[in-house]
Image (cartoon, rainbow, N blue to C red):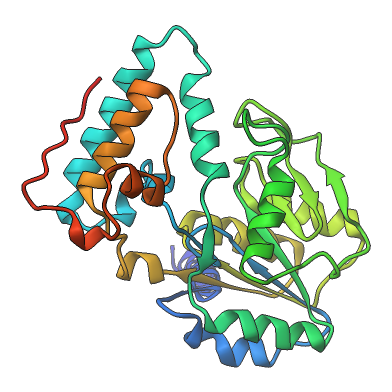
Length: 306
C-alpha cells in the first residue's frame, strides 16, 4: 500500500492541475473592458472570435428572444412563458406545419441589430488595421430558412449593420462542412465571408474544422460567447489541438436584462394569430396609434388569444 500511495497522489495532483488549467481558459466578464488588455496584446497570428447574438450584436425586437427566457427580467418571465405556450397552441390550430418557422423567419428578417457595447466596434476596427484576423462564430442554421433566402448572407448583413466586416481575414469566402450533422434539420455548418455558422453543432468542433480548412494555425485563439457551454467547447477543442486559447464567458446581457412592454407584445401576438404576419414594435405602435412606448395607457388590456 505504501508503494501505491505516492503514485496515486501524483496522478491526482496532475488531474487537479489539468482541471485548474482548463478552468483558467474561461473567464467570466460582464463587459469587453475586462478583455482589452488581452486584445491589445494580440498579434497577426492571433485569431479573435465573437459569437453574434447577445455578444457582439443586440436585436431591436424583443420577440427575437422569446425562446430565451433568461434574457428577460424576472417581472416578465412568467409573461414570456405564457406567450411561448400560447404560440405553441396557436401553431397547433394551423393546418400548415411550416407556420411557426415562417413566423420565426419573418421575425428574424424584420429585426434590426445594434452593438451590444458600442466601444468594441472601434476596438475591432483598429485591430483590423494591424492585420489581425477576426471571424464570427454563431450557432445559426444555414441555407434557406423560409422567408430568409440564405442564413449565412443574412448573418453577414447583420454584422454589416453594426459597421463590421470580417470577410478580409481569410481568402476563403464560402465553404460548407458536410461531415457534420444537420442538427436544425436544414443545411450543414458553413462559412461565409467571415461568418462561421455551426448550425447547432458544438462550436469547438466547427472551429477546429475551419482551422483545418484554411490551413492556418493561430498562435492563440481569443473567443467571446454568452453561452458557457460553447466557451467550454472551444476551450476543450483548442486544448486538444495544442492551440493556446482564452475564452470569455460574456455576461453583459444577463446583467442588463431586456426591457419590454407587455402590451406591445400582446398586440404583436394577436396580429400574428389573426393575420399570420409579424409586426415590428414600431409597426405595432403605429397601428395602436401611439408614437412612443410611454404613451401606452396603463389600463390597456390586450388579451393573449389562441
